[in-house]
Length: 393
Ligand code: NDP
Ligand code: MG
Image (cartoon, rainbow, N blue to C red; front, side, top):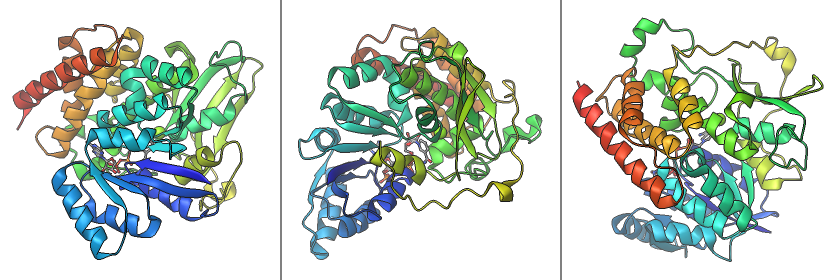
């Protein structure tokens, strides 16, 4: 029995994870679940999966959850706050931690899981973007196992040799080809992008996801964050990572080798595939995802990305090349900008302006410790809030 903790159980990835776990009660038990605001959903999950512990944001949420569970006769222990999140991620009673909190809030608990030597299933790409070196060091120094959930990185992981030593050259890897759907605005006239609404931006053509990552997909900041994520996961410099637009999202990414071979992982766009892969690795389990029918799809298309249409992608490559705290600044400013866009304070085209301004404003101090990262993260949030206030309509 693998005992699982899900950080961010009420989110899109959390719900998909529980869906896979429910298919294999003989293999997995749920040790702990966390949520932030969706208390009713968490109560319903606790009733079905009976975890030992559940963690929410604050005392008020904890009191509400405890009352709901009492009324249903569920004996889950209820806790709240960051310390409790770290505790369920590092407890000796859990083997595997699904890190699926959105944004920088996920860094601390994901790091706690790595430091405790857990099997870490990483969906929270922001943790690697903010502090890639520190995170990879925590994994290596504590003999944690890191398995990527992001569909592209899970695909790349599957296309690399089993004993890949984090060196593309040694493995004969020429390039990592990160596929991108291009999001809902791939073909929309650029001059009309200023007018798009949060609802339009969140309507992804192929994937159903949380709101923040959906906006990131529309700006292609998501692909930018994934380039940085790939750099840390696979030890690849920026020159060896190429973004390829592939609107059908059937190929989830590829690895191109020096002998001319290109390996790809294909499947229907459903996050339960990478989740099941990582849960069972190195074995395979059923995920509930329908088998791919290529004859029904018929056509696969590929294009180069347009960096002028998607300036966030260029900003992310800049941040990766700059290194140090630059990716943390990019990520923090983007979180503020995306929230301001979702709150209708700024327009879609303002998101990259807010991020570019923060990258100019905040100095790169080098990410030597988590404190360095968090200090520049705060400065970036302040800069972004100032730009949002100036642009707010
Ligand atoms: P959602 O917004 O759907 O879910 C986020 C989860 O995190 C929810 O459980 C939410 O709780 C919780 N949460 C939100 N804010 C906080 C906070 N401040 N502290 C603690 N918990 C918090 O996001 P997704 O599931 O879409 O994404 C999760 C992560 O996975 C992101 O990093 C994303 O980039 C990554 N990812 C997602 C993919 C997808 O298909 N969705 C694909 C690849 C990567 P509550 O709902 O109760 O408020
Ligand atoms: Mg992805």
